[in-house]
Length: 426
Image 1 (cartoon, rainbow, N blue to C red):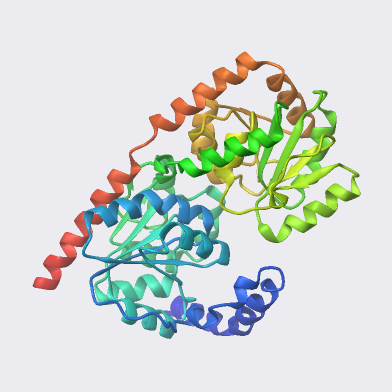
Image 2 (image 1 turned 30 degrees about the horizontal axis):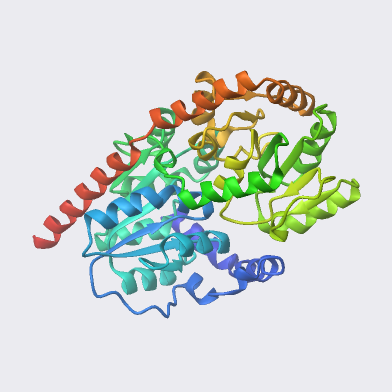
């Protein structure tokens, strides 16, 4: 009881900060200043008149990971409406691109009791699905009181995240026990979730392995490659703040004539910042948004677009996974493997520890520890076409071997919906 009161008090103390945060983030991403009412449970969408399946995916990565499950649910339950919520403008934009014609797209409200109640009253979901590690204590509690089954799907729980949840273990334990089901990506994720209080966690694998690369993105990658020409291409994918300088240091050490660096920052608000860095280093560069042939002297192509990562992977010879040279936890490597691209990544892949370990074991990736090794590994592989071909085939094999999470999560959803109908009938 004391913990719940403390949590609610903290939420109200943070209320002014939440508004300031939206305004501040909106300076560089105007989307944060749009649809603010939704973040407090006020919606202009028409109330649904059919049963609703609701899925929450906080941002871009979770939204893309949810795609195969949402499409499977839509095929299995054509009489239902679908509500898809996010917390970030980029996640919302991704959802609009993928599901705008088939689902209601909205922000999930902050975890204030009244806001949560307004959201649940308006949409009345028959089933809720929270992707990965989205555990909101008031939301989970209100769903339990209303008899709305909640699935924590594709759940991952790193050691670092587990330590954070341990700090509020009374709240975490109650919330996890109120979930109707939990599907974890790996056995290690399941073990940590069970330790925190989740009962009977099912290991279903990672939904990201089931994401099908859109043909249009593969075709776009071929267009990029045509514009680049026969030059070798090293992709630095989803780099984070401070990593671009390190990648450029590594690039300067690679002695391969004509090598093009395809540099794609993780966050769109940093595109101009990275362009300024390239100018400061006096590197000839072009921007993806300029959409033309590359000048002969171009050394860096800045990938300043959203939703095209698969195309960038398709256009490269070798990919470095960002967020791994500095302690950000790494980024999703599965999409690169799905298009058969060999990988390099640094020592900080704790958010994708199991996938990165399996990629290393399967020969699809090589680990590096610093800038010097990044340059050495990249130069060695780009100079050895046979080694690149072996790693490319290993990446495809690795990707295909771990598919099937969609069917396992769909079975859980079917069970929860069936149990919900039985409970309503009684």
